[in-house]
Picture 1 (tube, rainbow, N blue to C red):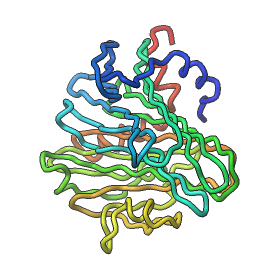
Picture 2: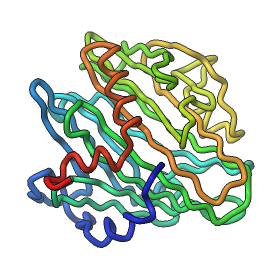
Picture 3: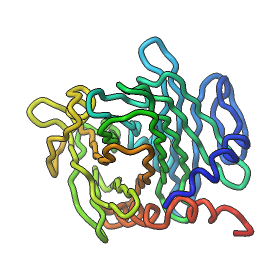
Picture 4: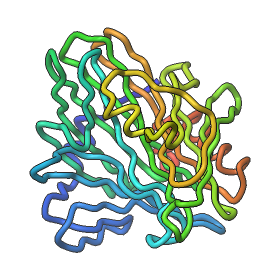
Length: 294
């Protein structure tokens, strides 16, 4: 499904390293002093964007998609998208627990971020490589992930996102599980804004468990990352200040590739359709929409 290996070397060589650089938009303009990379595009009535960030502090090292925004940078609708690895005995987060990481961007025809994190696990390492772009013709973000595993284990990969729709930072958000065309989809909403999350690995379109917000005092983050047991205590809806997490079981594999779509809309139907459409199209198809001769 994912043509990652044929593109990875080219993307890596063509990218502009962002260490010590700052905001880098579709025009290629550069500001200074951080590693935040907005990727944005606009249609008839919308503008959406996403940033990628590299972490290098005393308590965390790694990379992730950072803020997903709608309209402008002040309207952040998702506060980060974490990728978590469980190998059967330990749980590691690509933002906090990497031994090395890199965040770069390309701006030739396609503004594309790539994030690389080497994640230690109990019996070796997981090399997580991710590419992200904003869809050209709809308000959606597409993230392509490839894990190359140099370890034995019973692997599950989790994605944790935090909707923050509205001026209150997400305090009055609500979210629920739905489905569309065989996909499991989680939708978060507040005051007429909707964000939807869909996932696909090969032909698998359903989540291997999903957690929405706090239940019995535990957030999705606590349930997936802190508990360190590789298991989601699933629920199907929640409200308030919520985070959402979904699972993808791989087993004893040496590599795994999957897509994550984030759709934005003014209704549940719009957001779900946007998330599912970009995942269904695939990364290469969405990328080629930016290339004049494709």
